[in-house]
Image 1: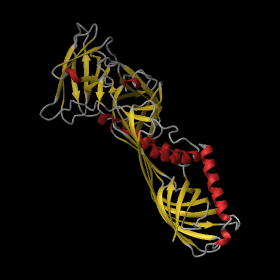
Image 2: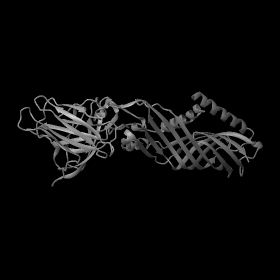
Image 3: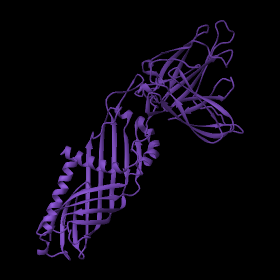
Length: 253
Length: 227
């Protein structure tokens, strides 16, 4: 019976598709939403003496009661910085509740700097938070420190316009595969050496932010110790951005 | 496969030709004759009532349906998955059979239309096995599933040919329909869940790809009973 059913169906499909000009799957991609680690903290480290400088050789160690279930936002246990930025969070099986928030510590160190250990707590409903860390050089009069913010930056200002950016990651080794990044994104005016500023969190590749029309921006996000940068001149209010994600991240699936 | 089809068609036509030799013995054309036939073929199972309107023209009306579900009919390359392909087609139809040549009553030109209450093809892909995101093991629910649906419901004209007599010379005969419906412009949807949630963005491309798939060929055997 199963063979008969398959035969009839195959005959019908072959007959129908025989008349079609285009394969039904032509140019269809499998789109994977990378929003696996739904609760996260982005840690942004700069030099306590110069906010435009990122200490070289940064390392991060995770400790505390939930440390075993904390991952880098690519899902790996590799806590590597890129440009002083790393995003980490609990595995999807560890969901913070009102009575049981996720708790862990991060110890950030760099050669020539005084290391710092910061408590991180992720509460129920607190999907994202930003931990801004300054490291002080050994012997510096400045002391390092950390501040935690769970509200996105207010980038709106006179002369800005709400612009929606839709990022899609492509994979060099999987042509039929696309990747929608859910991650913290930074920006700066293109062609400058200014430090990147935090723009906000893009969910499934999409973020709406206040930008100046006519300006050209570099947008950056970090996965697994690697920066991904897209440059876009902003003249309109909607852009679809394609990002070459290489192979490393694509192979995580 | 081709040989089988040719042999079958040859058999049907020879039977029809042989029967045509006796047509003088019987009423021909079959004015006011009535028959009922059960149908089976690419549009599924069905039934039709036929009425001889004039010397060359007969009308028929009927319904057919095809509910098919096939598991793992097609493997999806690069994705460890179970898939289910379902086709649900049901229609009511009205046809006119024109016998253009008096000396060839076994050959008919058939035209008409159907209203497809249902004309859906659904392909559901459910990833299986162990999927990981980095070092994190994902459950099938977290990975999600993908549904690609196409709906051609609506009115569809039909054109084809009929082989063998529409009305049995005696109580029963077998005849064949070959033709095609021209279906409505298909409505498509791509729906994903879990990590595959973002695949709705592929619907525009899927709809574009499917826009040319509007012919539903009919290869149908009819078992006809004189009333």
